[in-house]
Amino acid sequence: MRLWQPHSASTEQLIERYHRPLYWHIRRLVVSHDDAQDVLQETFIQIHIHLDELRQTDSERAWVYRIATNEALQWLRSRHEFFSLEDEDASPLINTLMADSYTDTGDGIVLLMQEAILTLPTMQRTVFNLRYYDELPYEEIASVTGSSVGAAKTNYHYAKEKISNYILTHQ
Amino acid sequence: MKQDIFTQVGKRTPYRTPEGFFEQQEQMLKNAFSEVRPVPVVRPLHRKWWYAAVASVILIGGIYGITRLFVPTSAPLIMDPASESAPIYSQTSSSSDDWSDFAEADVFLDNMNW
Image 1 (cartoon, rainbow over the protein chains, first blue to last red):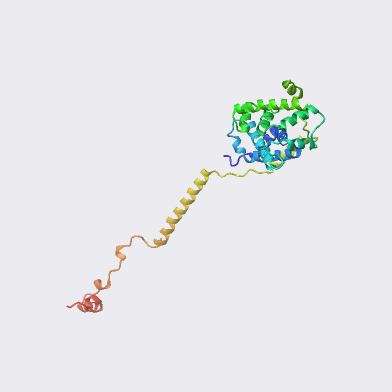
Image 2: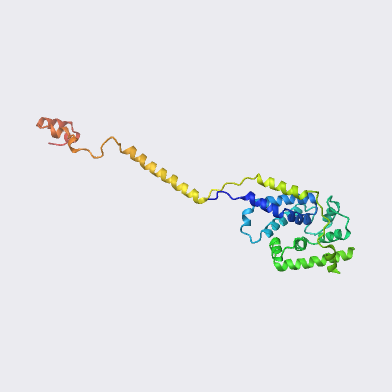
């Protein structure tokens, strides 16, 4: 007879598996290293609290990425006066990228591509990061973003087009 | 040309972390969550059985208490007819004086016109 659920053990396993990829996913969304650290900790708190829901989900990876994405976007919304998601104004995020102590400004083309990504609307940016950097299948991206597979493919296609055009114009 | 940009840059990003960041982060997160003890969960099924057991004990105790209160255990439940004492006026009174005394003392008999 089991009197309690082994929450802590499972959380430790998830920390081992996902703390690195989740950090990079959050970092690409919130840009600053210090903010990414805070959001990562909040993400694992939410994972720990809602661990029972994991047993009801098909994809463990999609579930943890969904929590991380929600936490990162919530963080951006909480700084609405600085990062206006409605206006899709990327300049504060680009400023953060340039000002952060842990940004390597040495490689111009790498920096320019990241700038281009930061100019994308939030949904396109999230989908692009999940597909391009994390190599998630479209089904899992749809689960993370709460959209359809078709919408995820369309967002990724438009994101690539916009990034290419941005780089061509700003090079 | 558009595809060349992605091929050229690949997955490189300008984001960096402090030296040994991930090792420290992993250890810190594990320590934080290992201190959180799991909360014991009492299943509703067990609670139901506990309620039934407590209710049974109260019921049995109540019946026993009532029995003890109204039926004294020292006295026999069925009295022996031989030990039962009969009324004095039917056993010992044989004379008519006794009957008249009895009649005078009775409020109903007194009011009757003999």
